[in-house]
Length: 137
Image 1 (cartoon, rainbow, N blue to C red):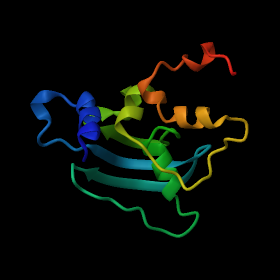
Image 2 (cartoon, rainbow, N blue to C red):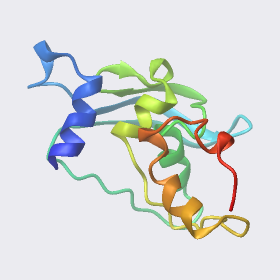
Image 3 (cartoon, helix red, strand yellow):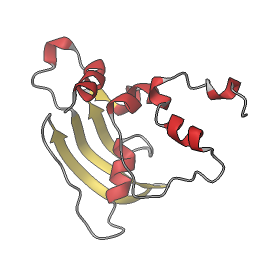
Image 4 (cartoon, helix red, strand yellow):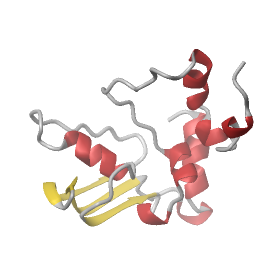
């Protein structure tokens, strides 16, 4: 884990329990769309230095699980915790500094300038409304 990643994770952790805490904890998670469960009863803990892989055939729920543990989808049942803090209690701006996902889906940048695409990677570290006040050249 790089120094930057550690600093971001440290923002979510308290000093007294940094050494033995799970970075990610998933308990009894059921995930899906519109209450249709795609994956159920998923349990795992991830600690610093561990690597976890999600393996399964197309349509088995791998992307659904990733979207749920990154708060892009709401969990149907169960809980997700980042550094012992419930995912629902973590603001999006705080979570985006601790977790990132590289999707295999192509981003939709049709109406974005090159500069806007590059700047979008800085959103977690800037004022969200900064672009609203900027005019295009």
